[in-house]
Amino acid sequence: MTDLAAARSNMVESQVRTADVTDLRIQDAMMALPREDFAPPGKAYLAYTDTALEYAPGRALLKPRDVAKILQAAKPVVGERVLAIAAPYAAAILTFIGADVSRYDGTDLNAIPDGDFDLVVVEGAVGRAPEAWLKALALGGRLVLVERDGPVGKACLYVRNADGIGRRVLFDATPPVLHGYEITAGFAF
Image 1 (cartoon, rainbow, N blue to C red):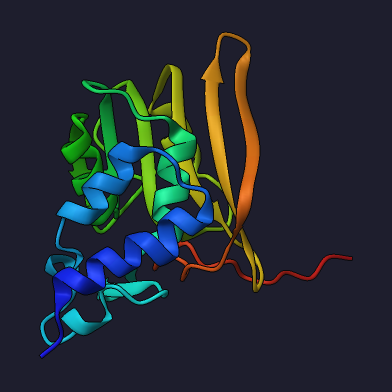
Image 2 (cartoon, rainbow, N blue to C red):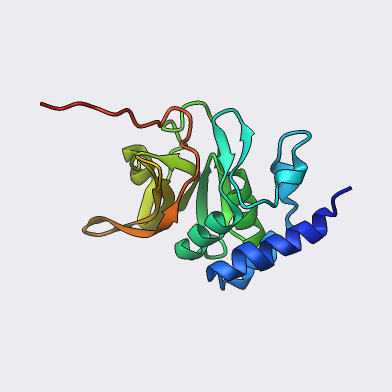
């Protein structure tokens, strides 16, 4: 029988803290929340591995390191209005921190709820941030996700300001691409 509490502690110590995640709120949330609750039946033993964890067809939790790093880059604030798109583990972490989180796991991830969100977080990769997700940001709002059009993706932070939307690359990541957001190679003349 696997000691999941020990595995959770080891995950935080060896995958999160060593990746320069210094936000103690994120560390505390990851230490407290049983990641195995997000694993499919019979796969709890995979919850604390250094890998993306498929929780539904075409949907996967980010690696512990990656979710911790994108959340730290987003700088969540207590009481902020957050939209978690296909991001159940990130949603739980942000709820633990004190954000007002709405989860969206619908079939069409572009048909997100209306609203001006302070933070939008996505677990899984897309080719490029969809316009619908950027439009959901309030002034000062942030979107964190991984953009991937090849073997290695880039975790990105988008910020809406009065002049438009800025984008910053954070780090390399290799999560699976969300179902329906696969990049198709094209041929141009």
